[in-house]
Length: 350
Image (cartoon, one colour):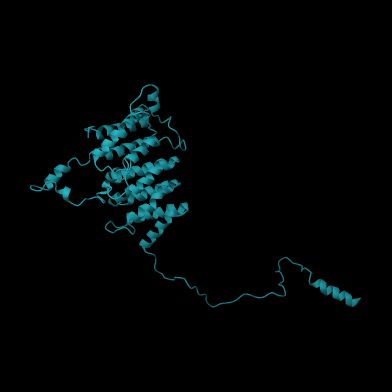
């Protein structure tokens, strides 16, 4: 009996669970192997222990690369850093990255869904030198037009502010770039919901169909943000028409005659052009353009195409908007004044 009980107890020992006590560690198994080790030093193969801080150019390029980050705070903070860096950069020293590299990086942020990022973008663009923006304003204008017709009201409002910035920064290049005159006018009229059913002003039902009203305009976004957008768009339309229709260099001929006395005449016409790609309007090697994508360099060309396609629509829209009264009426009166001054002296047979 004693030997058999001893054998049974030895077999049960392998399957017996140890009793755990509170405050004491769990007993280690019999086959436990100690894997701990002690080292006097740890060597990392790819670690830089340099004490030199990154240069301003390196930091500038780093923050420029963060503009495409998925993080909202990184995009906003990087724009804030770039704004501060450009503002504090010496005037006679070129920027770490040229404007031709900066604009393609920041242009997609025009359609950013966050308001703080777009507000910071407007501040950053205001710090860039205008003479370097001129050759690249056409690419930026593509994103501005996309923002003007966006479904979100806040993005449309920010795009309107950016269009006003572009008009104030480089008006001549804006209205004379590829598609800058006709396509931008069509976009602004679409935002204002100025549609024309017929080329002439109708009566009765036709006039009611062509009339414009801020209350009848379809709401594409939030109602609270829609209130001041028509007024802002009318002001931008007035500034855009002023840049494209009015004569800016009235005394240019007199100044040239005084600068170049006899026997020199029309000397500036034979000098090197001041604008980049001066013969781009000829479209010598590009694909054929239609009327909307054409470049209208001269004021008379812009007046002619405006008279042909937009004058009747804008005139009807302005008259209907003036009847609204209030801020909308005052803004429409400003557009009417610019329209009268810009088309003054224009002949239809040109």
